[in-house]
Length: 286
Image 1 (cartoon, rainbow, N blue to C red):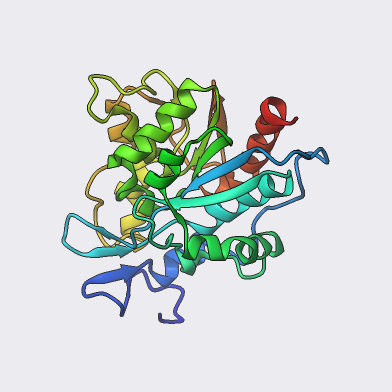
Image 2 (cartoon, helix red, strand yellow):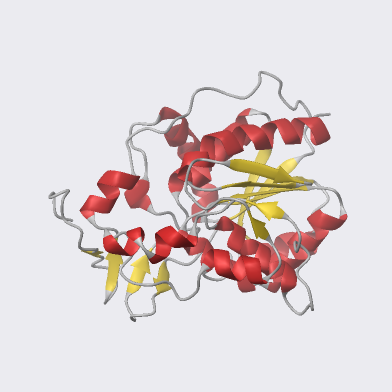
């Protein structure tokens, strides 16, 4: 990548023909060496050995855009690792799964290299991301010991996860068994799976926050964060499925509707992690 932080041209990804990373300018605006991590939500910890959190990560690197370029994406590391940090520090074991069983992909260009909490969590979980469980196997073996599903953000979450019958089965179990579902930014795309083969999505009527379409359709293209328009629009599709998106901007907002906890962007990762911990301890703290 060029060192010119005023360069708004998407940067070529040499690993794939016609693929691009975000522009240097967009990275200067959207990424930082440290997050806003300011400590844990509570000193209380889960002391048992049953309850775990199931992380469903994307195993797909490239998003094919409408102009036939590829966006080199994955899960955003802050949106992935900072909420996990909070949940792991609260005493909940973490399992990582992908739809294929192949490695989980991270947008490494957004990794906050100076953030000790994120770096420590990556060291603790990187083997699990590189050799995750296959989601179908997790579902088949039983979800009884999982207190929460966490679907991280990053544009890569829009690739295969929303169309997976295995994701649909997992969401059904968590809805039917009073478990927590946590997601942020583009991760709520996963909720579309709850409508596969049905007349209505099971999350219809839920209120959430998510990454605004207006940014993906406007500024993110103008500043070269995206190399073109996405194949489909997150908010538009979620609204068509009957969900209510309560934010129109990226402010770091979080919200909870029943057992569904959501955040709007990387700015929400720290608070969503805290929200998730408090919800977990309330329901599954003993």
